[in-house]
Length: 545
Ligand code: THG
Image (cartoon, rainbow, N blue to C red; front, side, top):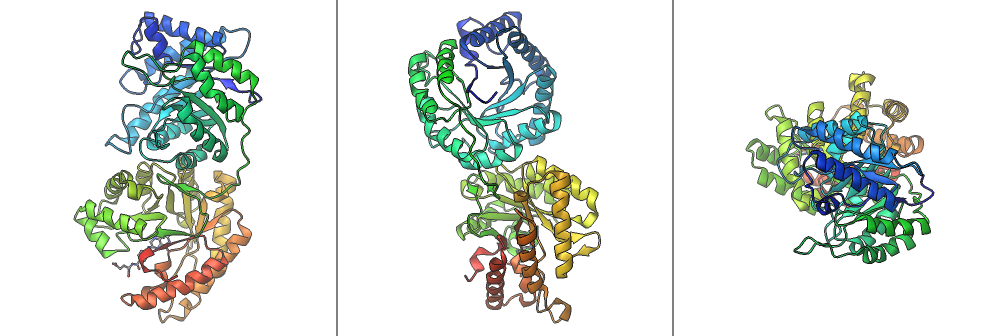
């Protein structure tokens, strides 16, 4: 299938207008016209036709519309006897944006589940998530697909602004990092500002994303009469470099394109070789609006934690979110590449506070550029928080404390959400304090996550417990050295996994004496980083390098 460039169809709306029918009804005239347009695109050379269901994920006739138009496309595809025609169930972003408005993730996900289940039940071959401009909406759709149609291949296509970012401000690289755990069949761009503007972005995507690449741009811009600026010939000319540079596995058209546009693209698709998926070394990657690639040691800001900062706790208790957001912004300014957010406090509704804070932080471009570390020991809070993260987040944390079954269940949920995870060295017997138990628990968790949950090692981050030293209790004397040796063990024996720690725990015995605490943290970090520590939860403003 992938030894040549596949051709996706062009616009449905433009063609329906030409045939004199509206785009929203399900009447017989519309059904006949949609069927006719599918036939025209197949005749023009399309290998994949997309169902007329782009907006069929809102309202109370979701099942009816998806069943009807998936059936129409299936029929048109199956009537072609000369070659195999695939049907892609077209799924749009809806009229809402989860990141920038107060829409509900659960409601959106439920609508997507209904749409996807109906499309798949009605015989589509793939799902085509197109024109997405908010990756949180896309996550609602991708998690829905995972739960109701895990076997159906997914094509993911975003639309970008002139600055090369999604409307929410997310860069394409961050977008690709967020989507990668869902293992789409293809990733690409559609709509946007036409072919020429799309070229550098498709090129960039083709170099960083280990998936097939798709592009189906608009036929330029519509004028006042709604006539698009690109003729079939000029669009074909604008698409030529995509083919010449070997960037494409799937090509088609979006708004304003017609069977004539697709016919020209189809003849070019036959003349050029498809994009070869790049070999990309597995690596730990997180994202907010921007990527976090773990090229260097990663600092995680600790101050947005009600249990770790009296000030932050007070601001949240007073519901002073504006100033609480300043604490987050200051962390990023101070060098935090990820921010740890914790609302665990018996006096707070942690779930609500987490949701509210993440929602506000998610639309503050200065904070939202970095990935979120969701810090809670309450599973309900973690589940809720994941619904507010546009990028690829990391859950802090899970452990074997409540036994293997709960551990596996939680890990699966996190995996299905496309997040990374911190695993604490805890088991049924409690917290690991000795070197031997720290190693043994991490090793056991590693094998469960990889063999039974299907985690990739790069999405596993171990935290072998930074414990408080110099407390006066002699059993505590070796805690720091044991941590450092465990880091070494993990790096040597659990390939791909990363190691993290909460550094400020080390010096709790010296609360109030920041000079001593800073010195302890610096010495500890020096040795831990040499042993292979990859990241740490710290107060970035209080670090002596
Ligand atoms: N591992 C993982 N997650 C963690 C920890 C860990 N999350 C929480 C904690 N440990 C890391 N975060 C902090 C945050 C603050 C402090 C310590 C650890 C701290 N706070 C000052 C104090 O208590 O003295 C606060 C002073 C103030 O109120 O301003 O030291 O280990 N995975």
